[in-house]
Length: 175
Image (cartoon, helix red, strand yellow):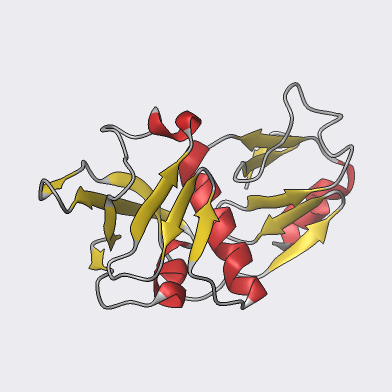
């Protein structure tokens, strides 16, 4: 964290878009920080319902469908995060698993009883802290993840920085 903050004072930032995986992580971290209980939440482009266990997919935005090996559909269930079953976890328990890099997600269709291919994604045990650094709100995960941006945050980049992007380097030095 200290090295990233020092580098950001004067450096050029390298960000990478990690797609729906980063969006899940960023959304889960924000939802945990809010501490509000909800019956459903948007985790990036996927709306998850919490009234059943395991949690189920209520809606998938079209741009998310292409990011999964097999189509993710309404009614599919999130049955595992990093090999841990979600059927006995409440909303907060599942969100805690989703925060952090390096996990897999496993969805299945309850109607077909077929598993979707595991998808590399997210894991964690505790809620990593986040803070505003300039015009970016960063989750101090490994690598740091963009949780939010202020107007003008993307002015120095070729493409706009987005929620879920990860910080890879500062002045060419990997973080």
